Image 1 (tube, rainbow, N blue to C red):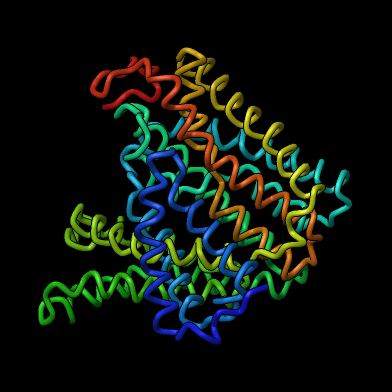
Image 2: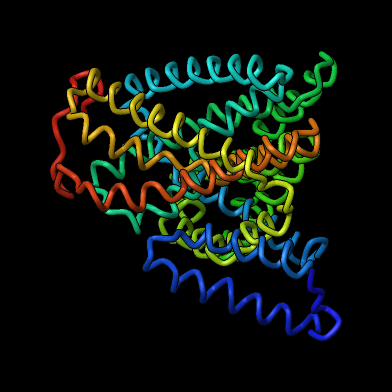
Length: 397
């Protein structure tokens, strides 16, 4: 392994890293390679090839900003009106998801010899779409306005349930600790609106244009709280985004299109560091022949299964063609962030073997590439402004 830190100063390393993270991935996008995959690859090269940035506190901090802002953006982009309008269909979707989670958990427990908690985490890693990443990637995918609306609704609804399951799955198996963690989370959800009201009444009149800094700091603090509770940063940041959406009428600036765009821009700067950091943490033993084979096997089984579940459900419930439903299914296939986070948790807390860890990483990387190729190969049947009629139960008011 080369150790170039002896002849390249830390300052020059960071300058080169900035250039690589923000220039090279943009050039590779012409080959339909998502920038997230490029950043993970750069991190793997830096860590396994040159042995740099593995324990770098700066990269770790920037990556935390990245994952927090990504889930804050996902929470801010929730459209409650759209979810309420399509609630009957989305409830059906979540029931199917719950059944799929239970089935995959049982299979993982039996086939991989895992305990209940890690088996449930593996099921989440295999079936949960990475909402923040998907929302951030929609512009680059050739989807219609109708498809975009459904993709957002399905991804957000799924993530709401997945984060709740993740929170429960990561709690210790003792009743007292579960109760304490749940109480702290509930108190956080209850008091967040009071914090927003206090900010609007006391601080905002004397500090105009401070909404962005306030929103970001609250998201980071809540993310750290849920991290201490064992539920990682995702839950806290997402809850803050949802809370901000609730105050859209009382505090228009806190969840306005301008604010959502500002958070998106902030995330676009820091998210590459998260993916780079994830790549740096990878090790050579994670990618043995058996790990690659296991990961590709997961792709062969779960990508068609998840697409088919969405397509068949939409065919039965909405009367859409299988092709139209499959396009939406392919759009929510990427599990990148969720799988990377859960795989790391499984390795740190449950001693997941390198073969299983590497297989999950390979699965996440490959399924993230799928929409970019499939959606361009099979164009939408629906124009950007025209959508098929919905059943009366979920039709717009």
